[in-house]
Length: 340
Image (cartoon, rainbow, N blue to C red; front, side, top):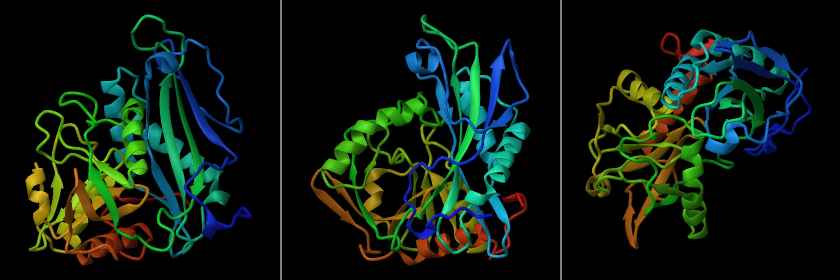
């Protein structure tokens, strides 16, 4: 029985749902894990996560397709990315097949919170892991908790995706051989001051450049960049300190296989940005957020696609990927996991 929620007026926030998944790692092994109704976590004051930020997370969505199925999109890639993150943070990997099973259990247990087709809303799923035993010397934890909760969220853009204005940031998001390529909580803590400062100056987001030379485009901290050239190519920045966005990787396949576009995944120099026809940010939450203008210390780069609507090529990419997610367009094999 679907919950009595005003789906069309949901924001992007936390609403407690009925069940969440919890598994514990102790004495070198994971337990079986279980669903629980308790949303609270009790831990010691000296827990590793509270002292040394040993924590990571993922984000994915479940939604109702046009034909009434509840599905999720490419969860195996989220499982793989969390495994990579755990290895980099000296955390135990939660087995990838069980990871996907945990996601499925949480969606099934909270199926009444999956918004109906056409509402623009979805069920946001947040898997995360952290070191929980007391650690006072700087070292990895010995015990960990892996949890998955979900919350219904409204459409990222109410009233359509209007192009945003972003700025080139003076802050660095990630060091050249640091943790920019993994989804560690600490990366997001690092970006908080920069995003609050950007908002205070009237910008929606930051464009981070590479920390070593400050000549190459990296990402925004919450999303990867995608650019369209004047001759219709999709260009995405390549760097070992960019998080490998699942949406961005999917859009590259959509561009090439569905829309017959040329795709380049390469280093993108900031000097080139003024020559692109369209610019967007891509990620789980919005799929594509169009960028109309980039401000570089007072100098404005305005894209030909303008400030009124998403550019025509981005719109095609957006419509095709969301069409695949919603079951209107046939998906590549393995992209859509049907829950029920």
